[in-house]
Image (cartoon, rainbow, N blue to C red; front, side, top):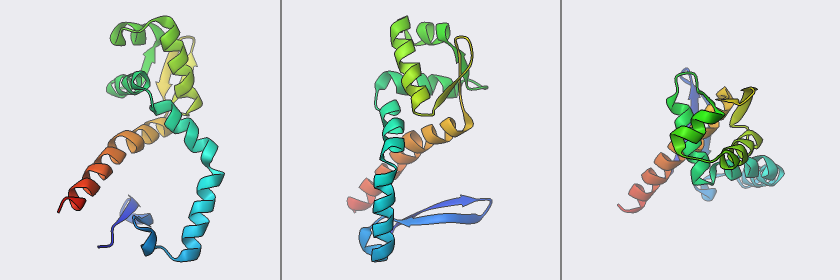
Length: 137
């Protein structure tokens, strides 16, 4: 069974990715593996930003807001966090490119950050669920 992921914009396939190494041409797979090594730092920052429950809760809370914006005090109140925890976790989210500071104590999830969050949380979860379902057949 050949499985692949596709990224489609307005009906145009931007790329597709086979999910089995045997479905890749050898040279292309080697190139992709090489590129993965080159992107280690970038990926590390994103995964590091989202590998903590508090940061996931913060991102979830931001995504619930119409303008994807919250202030420092809202994080403390809504998530029952102390100032040090909010400061440390907003810093990690900013380093991962998920959050931007728009004013003193005001944070917004950037457009790119929203896409990263959706990719890592929603899309990854659904992909894993689909693969597990396929494997259980």
